[in-house]
Image (cartoon, helix red, strand yellow):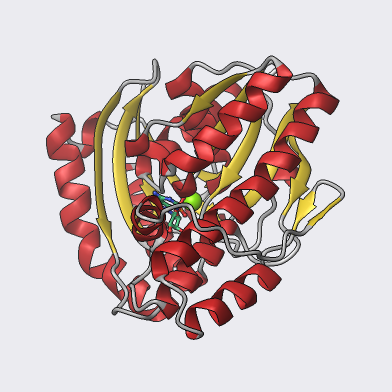
Length: 330
Ligand code: AMP
Ligand code: MG
């Protein structure tokens, strides 16, 4: 079975063809770049997706060496995400499914990050840290759903990095630039608010404090270093507590922020103390992509045979992962 997966929740418009044994036949993307110093404007990002859509789709089929006739199902990212962006992917998916008479499968974007990460890393029953532009969640699978052990109480870690990066004049996404600056610091740590409540984290006070330090003229290398040390230590603390509580022997990190080496290092240490093995989603697939949608749609469809009529298909800006039934995972 071949699935065409379409991703368009935020900055990335992606199309990928994946086959049911998990082979990724193609993974094409075009990423919206905001102007320097600004964040994603939903209207501009959706315009980008509309312009990129047909070239990305065509290239994805071409790289996979298939045509639409060979595709068995069409999966699309139905949420959570930015409404105008989600609608572009949904329109493309509906059009293709309707015209070529293929089953249409709506996929929860966060679930896509988890399921592709598990397939690529071979993690079977991990505690998961999902860290991206839209999510900061600690999850474990139990009784048919991914359950939330901890999450952010305000902004996500991706938003923290991106919003701080923008005050330094970078364009979103800024996590990579912040990581590069942080490694150039001589390790000069500036005290910043460290807020873990129960197993939840809060980053907004940290953002205010680090922005103030930057405005006072503290070197960018040192603010970036201190920001990473503080935010990632908060996450590592919450993860370690969840590992200790659940006794999970596997820990997996997925989402765009999983690309960060310092975060992986801190989690590696936490896993070491708890006797767990760390699985890091491969860099190429850490951020948003069509393959995560295609792979999840395949599993969903194979297990439930559920599809949605084109006229009933939907997008949902808010769609919590812990409300989604995951019948194929036992
Ligand atoms: P996603 O929403 O999954 O595509 O992830 C995007 C987020 O990942 C953005 O907030 C980026 O700033 C962040 N990101 C990308 N690369 C890195 C990195 N090397 N370190 C930290 N964050 C990163
Ligand atoms: Mg994402």
